[in-house]
Image (cartoon, rainbow, N blue to C red; front, side, top):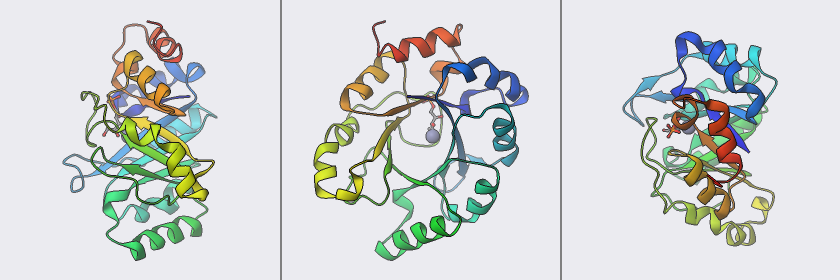
Length: 215
Ligand code: DX5
Ligand code: ZN
């Protein structure tokens, strides 16, 4: 599946941007940041509202921030399908359990994002987003090593039976070629921003990712 990351879309023309790709993607990915976990600071709920009004496809929100739970209620009220928080912001098992409890309280489908350097040592939820760039901005170069976490999903699933139906996604630096590598490693979803929205022909760009790189 292909999710379009709206970080690379023109926010002043959001509706048009969404419409230009909506029929061709499987969902939308919205990135928010707190200026602490990552340098940029950006949180705008109107992006979620506008996206929800434009599509019935799933919307996932990737919170690159500390204390992401402060946004859970608002996001779930806006119809977000999945909220992704970073593994790195939770310092210990208690904080991880508290995060899952907070998500449970609001009926949130929680995903966990892992930075390129972070190893998967436990399966907290059944959605794992493998960062293939260091989080924080679009248009960065793909880092290949983290794909190892996806190709070892068989072992992760063996070690953590709760992860057996896990969805693995790759986020960052995705284009036709790297999408091919991610799908070959076993990714279910690739998240692409710049490759879609900076393309002259967006529909074609999406098609190229779907052909898993037949060029
Ligand atoms: C990066 C974000 C990504 C970003 C991907 O920190 O989490 O979702 O939008 O953008 P591209 O596809 O440009 O690497
Ligand atoms: Zn993201």
